[in-house]
Length: 86
Ligand SMILES: [Zn+2]
Image (cartoon, rainbow, N blue to C red):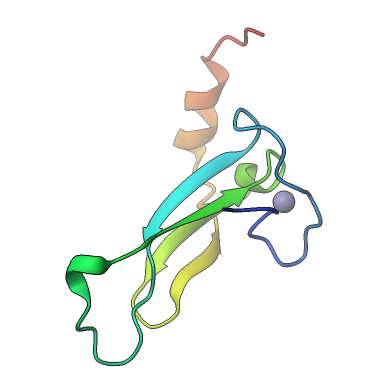
């Protein structure tokens, strides 16, 4: 179970599901990759602040990689239309 933000430079602790964003990835298998049917799912969490500027992607060699979100004008516009509740 995740306990803190996947960003190594962030010290946010995981408390609520509604905060931030959860990611599911298949756990990186050790050299060989024979246990395909027994693949574990790893959960990663980015806190509400980090998920605004970063995301996690599956990376073959390292398992999971933290990358900055692409900052396109389209994605910014899309967020403006959303209404906030709660
Ligand atoms: Zn964070």
